[in-house]
Length: 455
Image 1 (cartoon, rainbow, N blue to C red):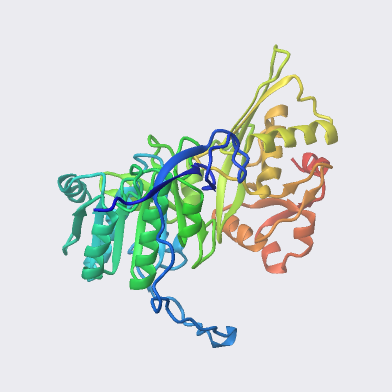
Image 2: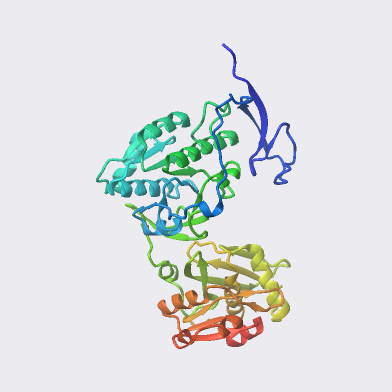
């Protein structure tokens, strides 16, 4: 019996670059010591005559623009992140820290779809049938049957699924699945690529929605090659601390909807519950007459989110002042502190500065720059900002305040939450409609000095 031929290749753990020999630095991502050795089955050379499928060219105008068929997951917050529901034939990757709630959310989706009459299969390579049953009993609400499969061989699982042809499949997780065609261990770079390729082909050919769970590294990104995220249709990340109550489901890639949409959930005894008004949740318990506390508005996809920024500026006796930021980019905070020193004449070189985003959120939108500056000024001068004030705007290196997008949506959310005054960029104020001006007091500013005068 002839032995199967194998070859040795080297894959980059960060970007998936493939090389025939080991190199200290990856040519793809320029990272050091990221290439790992893998043994894979050598591909067969050539194809038999007549086995290739006949292909033809299709004109752009010949392509039909029918709307994708979507299934209601029964969770409106998840439907928002996915762009309106679960698209048939889509491959969705869900990542997050261990214990964050990935398996809980997916089992809730299986429950809702099964109760709606859909055929759902839950494939687990990590947990036994009894463990899944225990979680299902804790969640409750299962009125119809959900099929379970404990299998780590992706080819065996795919064959069973092709015969069953369910409406949705959950694979938990992609790092535990393996293929006999690849000789390396489960969870390796080559195995993850092969398993994802099999699932992608299965989802597209059969028109079945497939959810796959991906482990994350200590940096918080999905483990395995970066090509894993390029192969799937949608990438969802679960954010939040395990000890915190609230979880954020963020869509960082979506071929069937807008990106950067978020869904807010609260972890309870019966599983993950939706938070329909996250702005109210984020502002609960905020101090009303404390210096260094400012409310900003950030756009997460199409949703305006009001959140509190806290700053603490105190003199230090050390030569090197300390700078700390939580939930906000550290370098961005240092940049804004330098703008205050240069353009506003504030002597922050002898003070420690701590900036915190309340609620365990992480924001990177430039529109919160003006709020960070106002919080620092309020703490530095020990003067509280009026609790009914909302602030947003981007700040440049010369101290100018630049305009932002979705101003109407931000102001409408502020009015709904009871805010009476708003400090926004001057360019945005000039383009506002009269209806919004009558409902909230608006101050337009063009530079940092004008902000200090208003505060």
